[in-house]
Each structure stands twice: as C-alpha cells, then as structure tokens.
Length: 417
Image (cartoon, rainbow, N blue to C red; front, side, top):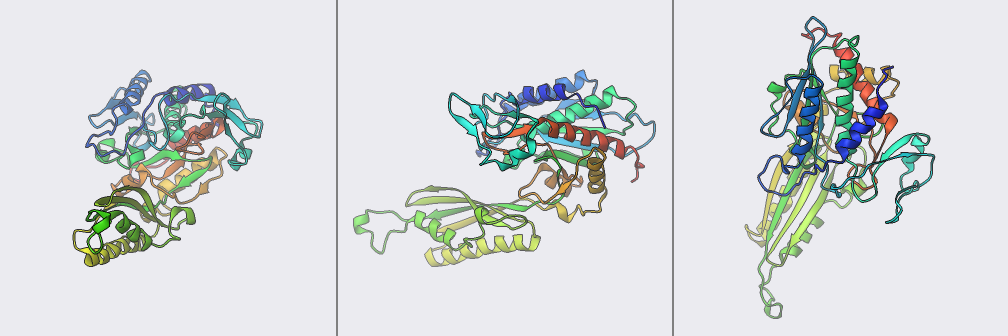
C-alpha cells in the first residue's frame, strides 16, 4: 500500500545496529546507566533535524523528542511513536556486525570461523521466512533489533510522510528513550512535555504481534545474615546464610517458575544468588498478569520472610520488594481507541494482528499508568537478547507501513476524540 524505501530502511537499521548502546543493571546511580547510549541518541537528533524536524532535541536525561508537524490545516489529536536506543546486557553488544542473508531454508552459518550456526531445528520459526532477506548477527553479539528495528521503522515512516505530502496526518510526536532494557526507560520521562494524546511503542516481536496487556512486575531482594565460625566447633552455633537462602527458595512453589509457565501464568524467578556463610543475597523478579494473583505472590514472599525471621532472629532474613510496572491491560481494554486503530492499521496494510499479552513489559506499560495510553506494536525481530537474534526485512517494511497507516487514521479523528 505504501512504497517504503526498503534499501534505505535496511541501511538505516544496520547503521544503528553497529553502535554499541548496551545499558547496565549495575547499581551506580547514573541515568542513563551507560553514556554510550547517547551516541545513538545524538545521531538521531542530527538526522531528525536534517529531515526538517526543527524541534528535535536531546534532553538532560538522554531522551530524544521531536515533532512531525500536522499538514491538516485543522485540529487533530497528537499521536506518538516511541522506541528505545539501548540494547540488553544479556548478550555481548559491542562490535555488532549485521549481515544480510537471502534465506532459502535450512541452517544459517553465522560465523564459519567460529563454527556458529543457527539451526532450523532449534529455531523452527525460520520456516516462516523462507524466501525472505534476513538481517542476522555474526554469531558473537546480539543484533539490536530490540529495539533499533523500531527506531529505524519510526524514522523511515517520518521520511515517507515528508516525501508524500498527500498523506494527511495530524501532529506526530517521536521519542527515543534510554535504559528500557534495565527497567528504567521512562523513570524521568515527561509525559506532559511529550504532548501526545495516544502513543505506541514499536518494540514487539514477530510480524503481526500486538500487545495491550502485560505482566504486573516487582523485584525482590532477600538478604540473609548468618554466623560463621570454625566448622570443627560449629555445632549449635553456626548459621549458614547460603542455606537460609536455599530454605527460602524451597518455600516458593516449584512449578511457578519461568521454565514451567506460559501464556498469562505468573512466576517467581530467581535471577541472581551470591554470598558466603555470613552474608548471602538472592534477587527475584515476580510476574503475574492478574493483579490479585500478583499481590498474593508478594504476600507469600513476605510471609516466608517473616516465618524465617521469627525462627532465626529478626536480622537473619530481610526482604525488600519494589514494584516495577503494572498490567496496562487494566487501563487499555480491547475496545479502546488506540487498540482499535492499531488493529485497523495492521489490517489496512495486509497484516493479520496476533493479539497476545506480553510475558514481560515495555515502556508503554508504565506510560499508560502515567496517563499516556501506549500499546505495543511489532518491530519484527526474533530471538531478542541473544547472538541468534535476527529480523526479516519484509517484517520491518510492514511495521513501517503500520506506523504510516496510523498517522493517517489519527488524522481522521477530531481533536477532542
């Protein structure tokens, strides 16, 4: 429907992918967590200004914001599109070497020298992309399609709108955030300054994925204090902090872990454990789509901590719970305007929506609770956060078309709508 410049889109994405923008979850009190994220942010500001978006700027927190002005000559609601510049710390992110391959089926040799092969048996979804061009890694780093594919698609949609003035659109607000991968992407985001009435994160997975619901999420840190002494004389005296951590974990439901759950089922996930006899710390993430079940999970952890503290002494087990984000589905029902327009835009460009809840979260979940309705649209990538990450070029083209279609649909809505 829309003639997207595929070659320019690919070149744009690969240019962004080569820039190291990994965030870090290390506790260092810095925002953004890594200054190298700003290398891409600064480049995006330059490119936006070159396109004529004169208000493009990088603020003191690392957020990029810009406006594609309305060409309607009348009032219409402002719609926003967001993507994040940072990549995950879960896999190597420096020295990314994206490769373009014509996929004819079977295994893909990512790195012959190192013997890295993406095997179709391990990645059965590859069969959907036979005959397509894929952008892959060299097998030593992640690719960064999460979420540089989203950035490239937003930028290319802006280019299309500028090159095709016959496309009527209202004000379009753009934002590129930092630190999304470590859960702090919109900690300092100014929704009022952004000025959109509705928005979308372009941060989903495969072609057609659309999400307006996600996990409720919390982080738990449990600290255990033991007593150490010579093991030869420890009877009745030693208290092993590591064994306390094991006892704590054993009281959480074994089948309610990520490896045993799917769909909307929640879980407790032990993400890190470190320590010795005297001191030990366990870190968990807690997830559930249902708000009542989510609160029950937190209550269970509190109860376990209280029982153990009563048994071993009040300083032996200390629990710190921190809420991270909530299920945007509680505020974005299926019949809400941003959901319905997104589904219409997808079908308009020939993409059948795959509506599903996210087994995770996005910046959009938090933005929705900050007063900006913000569901999530596919960016096209597969195998995020790994050295087997890839993105099919046709999926990127379709995502760009969806953004353009949404610009046009919001132009049809009165400003008070």
